[in-house]
Image 1 (cartoon, rainbow, N blue to C red):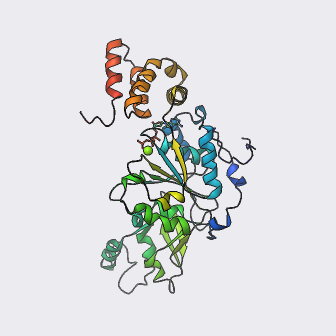
Image 2 (cartoon, rainbow, N blue to C red):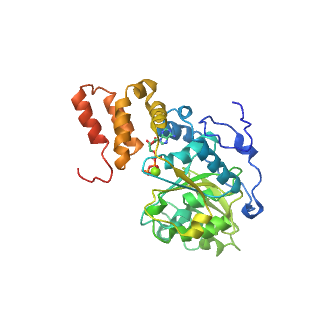
Length: 344
Ligand SMILES: Nc1ncnc2c1ncn2[C@@H]1O[C@H](COP(=O)(O)OP(=O)(O)OP(=O)(O)O)[C@@H](O)[C@H]1O
Ligand SMILES: [Mg+2]
């Protein structure tokens, strides 16, 4: 596969994977964090390919709009999080997977935010209870590590880095981190994220406390089966991760948080973009045979919230057997209902 040489644009938005991330210029001095590594197992390869085809069908059938490509590249070069806003179903979350796929950056680290989410748990979790329980097991029990007179060197087996913690490990390539639906989170969450976005580092006090006797500890990461060796209980990134933060705009974020992000507003897709999305998922024939459904979707979208995945569902259903005109129209109407209309 050839490497594109299109000036400063690293991410091209073509859906064709390439090794252009190696051309990424050094960070601005204030975004160089100096973490050393790699001391961790690399993200599983290949999973991003499966995710890509699940999420956007044939990735090469769809192109990211040119204005969006420039903004994404600005975030890449400045090592700043990308704050993606837009109506429901406009492809905000999909963007993170498109970046990971095209830049061959492996599995996307995913933090779905809800009202109970805390940054602490997205960084790491320490299973103190599990460790205490195992320490009390009789010596003939399944694991003798942690028995009363054993050294405390089993602690790493009870620490698992979350998606944000794993994204900050100092690997050779930046990871892609999707912080999905930040506006659904606690009011304080953006403020909690600020120091992390500025420092690219965090400490694990449980490990820092034992650092003199245990300078290196192996912990689990957010990747399936992933392991990392931490020194002195500190995680510091080498390259700031590619952070995609999405929001439906349910709530405004504090200005000092917004200022530290590069902002991308995704517009509602027009007819041409919808056709290319439908073709990418369901093939050109399905797209050509569904112009009436797309038309209905555009009409509905003018007055309310209908998402692209509703359109895809409607076209899938109507192109798989439902041919009778009235039944087809009824089903399309049912599936393209405004998401804010909560009636069953
Ligand atoms: N570039 C694309 N190519 C093909 N399909 C896409 C693309 N972008 C979005 N889609 C499709 O549109 C649908 C909605 O995308 P996505 O879930 O990313 O939207 P969203 O803006 O994150 O929605 P929400 O606000 O509900 O979280 C998905 O079915 C996805 O597969
Ligand atoms: Mg989403």
